[in-house]
Length: 157
Ligand SMILES: [Fe+2]
Ligand SMILES: [Fe+2]
Image (cartoon, rainbow, N blue to C red):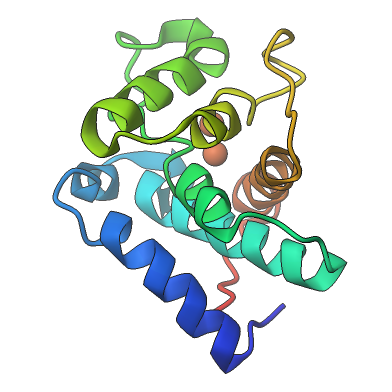
């Protein structure tokens, strides 16, 4: 599951403004699954989404894909803490992440939709309505399964 040099360069060019932003740095402090921070989970989901788009040969908006994928869990709290999202975290965090992404990065409608729909079908009324949203939703489930059940953390780059 590796990206070639050209793919890696393009992904890094699109990802760096978000990954090196002080706004996303707090995600490094929050645990997502097991030994994986929210930041690393978001980076893995971004790489997996991008890799999937290339290997499936789908024509996608790379910028929207990378932005939506990296910010899909930009909710900025530790979901293991019983307070912020509580038991409803699974249902509520896409909206929280979307609001933070709008506030910090002024993301567009397509990117917002990617974030809002990544938990579908849990969030019944926010289904993926673009290839990019479908890829991120799929990559998120795939990566989450690896991180929780298999405890595998492969990187693509
Ligand atoms: Fe999520
Ligand atoms: Fe996620």
